[in-house]
Length: 550
Image (cartoon, rainbow, N blue to C red; front, side):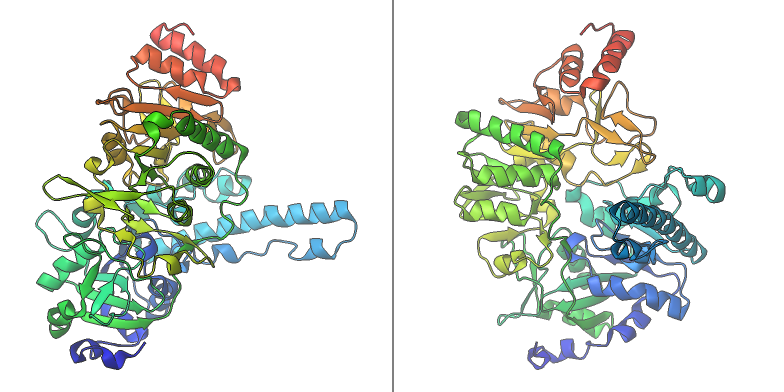
């Protein structure tokens, strides 16, 4: 990119990353970064080495949905080789090769676990902590009970970073992220340094947040106005240029950074790093349970086309949703799309002609129809794919702030395909935790379900069983949630609703209609789609607790 075309005030703030880090990452610094696909990859890739080199401590990082396995969070955990690296490939006798491979895999797991715990100890010694509004595997690994952990790390067993004093969970709805993550109750920044990534300016001087709007623009706008925090801005030519709407933009004009530059609080790093993405084969080998659930959802949409066609589709992140979208491409369903996240498979569905357009909620609450467009608040592509090229300068793609997208009004009368981890007889739904350990987050889930409760159709997808970190198989349908489990929404969100709203729980064993159910009816519906091996237990619990006979 030709930096000579940048305004002088902006050029003068361009520095090498090492210098930028020395100015913005010091002992005691509170750092806030972009979320998901707007996370600063180059910054996170290099900051741990910088911290160790400069012997920095007392840092806090505030973010959400960290997508890449950075050393800052994991240390050298993923660099393990095992006890017998490469030996299996050199053994011609298949049984011995199998044993060697099994031994190597087992020792890799032990070694990786030890390295992870060691890294956590290093973070604690430096007093480096994280705050997250939504967890990913980078931060949610639960330490299992093993012979090694029982002896050496008994206090870590059954805990992940949220219960080890390393990661503080930020309770929020996605629409509220700018205020909750970025500023305190008095409007002061929660960070001393905000780190963001944007595209280079186009011919009109516009710079885009690229693959994700989320709350980035709203946070930066307030920082630019008040100049009360440092802004470390990575300008990345690889980022796709996307736009929002006139009163919900995903861009800044480069001149909006002038005040910050003159205040000496803007640091610009020219960047050529990758865009966060999921592995290319992430959904190529789906589990049988995911296939069964997706089949049921798509079949139901097709069989009920008179009431499902034409509605705006929203799909949550995960294998089941992706499979459903893939199958919809070959189905008779057709409609519109309004979603929190846009991924390659939904874009395929749009480009196939199945999706006619989207809509947007104006500030006064009016719904404006947008034909030939898709509205989302962030996007997520696959590594090595062409998704980010397809959305680059694509007028059909609208990427707007979460505060304007992930609100209940946007999902009225729509269709939602979302995931849950567990549900119980009282209608408590867990979409974000494994027992006491935070596992992901609420994100937009609760707002979406509340929106669908007005005339919408909600498919809550859940595998009927799951395994504990120690490998014990459990039902995902409980009489009562395990003690300490965070609850994301409740019975009225599913069994209530108005204006013809419908709500379904879908497992690999069937689809249960929860619409308008009383508790006894609700419990019977849950048990009807539970794993058969756990149904007798659940039936006994239904009688023992509520005298309900199945």
